[in-house]
Amino acid sequence: MSFSPIRTLLGAVTLIAASFSSQATLITNGDFESNQIDPNSWTFLSSSDVAGWQGSNIEIWNALNGVMAVSGDHFIELNAHGANVGDWSIFQTFATEINRQYELSFFYRARNNNDERFEVSVPGLEWDISGHAKDVWTKFENTFTATSTSSILRFRSLTAGTEGNFIDNVQVTASPGRDVSVAVPEPTTLAAFGAGLLALFGLRRNKTKA
Image (tube, rainbow, N blue to C red; front, side, top):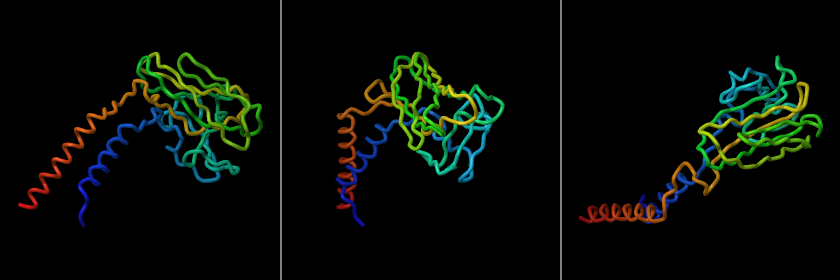
């Protein structure tokens, strides 16, 4: 089987450009998939047993009562069971760069009714999340600017009791075009790389003819 050098070159350049442009989330275990939870069930765990997160107990669901996760199989109920009744708060510390802008997103949903509320915060900003829909996930999106080399994302329930405030697919990424942490090659860099590949293909072709 033979391959066109130009087609191979274009494929290589496309893959390289895609790898540079992709932005990975800075949050560990943002979709709460690190623990094994049986389908149609739930369990609550100490935060020390859940990768990435600290704080209160964390209650993880897997398709219980017909509620499906946004990402993967699992999501959490912020108002968990356990010893911390009335003070449900989980948080995660992640690396940031001072004066860099980041995008925060996650999905939330009510368990029982739209009176459920929680607070989400990052350094210098707090949002009171209320008016949840019970039968559909809602996406939260906002931006913040880091003021330190590490930042804390925190979720805190404003609803008492052990039921309410589903959360899933928590992500923090560097905002596109705002001092991103991975340098994207300039067009001239990609062009030079492409020229080098063309020269390599030409050399191999000449050797084959010889």
